[in-house]
Amino acid sequence: MRHDLKELGGLYISFDGSKSKPLSSSLQKLKEKKIQDEVMKKSVIGPDFEKKDAVPPYSESKHALKLKRRAEREKSTGDGWFNMKAPEITQELKGDLQVLKMRASLDPKRFYKKNDRDGFPKYFQVGTVVDNAADFYHSRIPKKERKRTIVEELKNKKRYQHVMAEKAAQEAGKKNKKKKKFHKK
Image 1 (cartoon, one colour):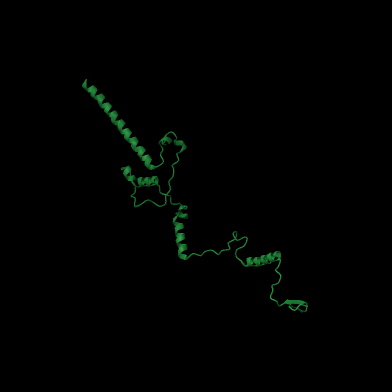
Image 2: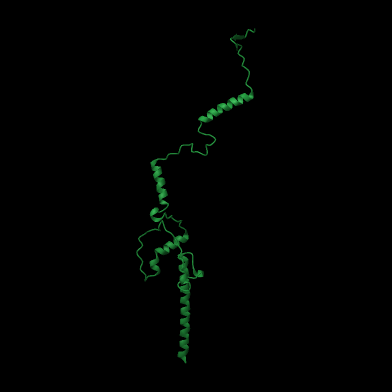
């Protein structure tokens, strides 16, 4: 028997400090895989991590939640007004709102209730009046004369009145000339 190995009931122990034989590479990989699987079982991240809500939700303060709800509420008028949204105010809309605000000056003979609002309204909708089929030949505006905004409509009306005034002046001038001709004779 060798002096560095002792036999103790079928067990061999080496006292020389040399390391034992390394495990084969396949056995070592299996052992590492088993350890990795045990660690992954305890982990929050798994194969179906993206599918479920494994991360706890972020909790906001009561004040932040209150501000967020207020901002959401201000985007529309609410259920009482059918959740009407606040439109984006463009130059065309701004012009139409100014004309509506000063509508009393357009027709001085017509009475309009006093406008007590300083600025423009926040919530409003713009619609199109649909003509009645029965009024096809009278009391309707032909498509050629229809305009997109109230401001364009007023400019068109003003231009029309200007042209009609010029024609009336020319007609009056022709009548006066004819009268003068007759008076000279």
